[in-house]
Length: 138
Image: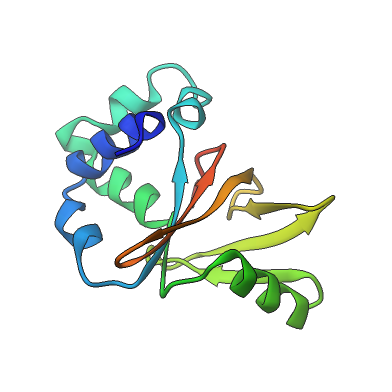
């Protein structure tokens, strides 16, 4: 229901993940905004939304999902126990690294890209959403 996430919703539909993410969960979703998708190279989103690229789109989207419900305090506690960094295993299979700098939380992806968590703890009936400003890549 967020006007800032229409590209993400279109991508979830194109990847056939709507029913999965509507499921019981719980899930932790790092949700890129429309502006995050707009940062990708020109034509990337359009290419990913094509039916023949469904597998790649699904891989990217499930890289933004962690099984279980992890509120910001849970991520912070996990990071504190691990020297300041929390390794989060995604549904896609690879990990994201969560870390804090200057009071803000960031995620580093498998390719070294970084996303800032801009809105944390958007609680849902089947988990939690954290809004991020960059699309993460497996």
